[in-house]
Image (cartoon, rainbow, N blue to C red; front, side, top):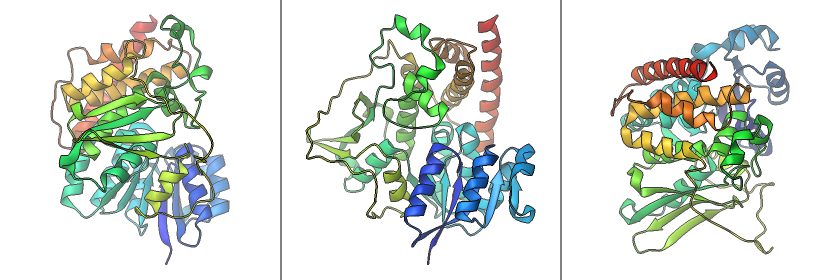
Length: 383
């Protein structure tokens, strides 16, 4: 019997890659539902191709643009939650940004298998997610390439044998830029990633290295590891996705071609491997693997994320919210690239001193408060 997959964020880069995997494995996988934020045009194409049972568009005003039977078309967050409660076997959460948190919470409350690509779920509410996993029978399988790599390595290792988790970073498009040159980079340059093809927000986060800060926070909750045991290394080739240092000073590493469909297939098949027609790494060809520590003077967003993690849950939520505001402002041409960490730091100054937050409602309340403050700081920055 085919597994039914509900794809949240189907029109984004991860959603499209997920549908590629499903298309190549139609003997075992089927699309139960498709959900997008506002790209009704691409959603219509996907509906025609995959014939889902249900569809949903987050932005209600886009409903009329979706070519689908109205009785099986849902809208908004309540529509997403209703779809999660139906008979899908696997929920892929690839929704963008903070709107992905509520679907994650709902999926785990419904004891679903969750293939998680939305970073903000664990960044904003890692403590809440761990509690839900402990209380129910739901499962979480990471889709992000770095966390999938560590997840797969950790399956064969006792937690007591782990010394350090190492998350790799491509370094983004500006890894060789001088600090002074970063003031003048344009949005189109920041959105041109040298390795991965991703959505705008995550591509920009890669350019600022905020992406790695968020991934450290995710790893802290995903693997229940203290923050000081998680490190970041810049690895421009993007071949080694995760490394575990063991207490006997040996290392275990996961290598793969940089193709998101590989970890997606692993998640959709619930930690089982299938032969794939894409993404083969030819190790018989000579290549070099290089590693170096990140430069947090040139890329202070990573430092801000690590500092927020040390300060506690409230600071992490505020950091994430202010980064969303700053990222949108830069993409829209309202601020400079180097203003992004400035805006985040001003939003965090002396506020959000809540070290432990244990419910999703408070998480969302802090997020709203921090977003409002970041928007006020943005107006002052532009004044």
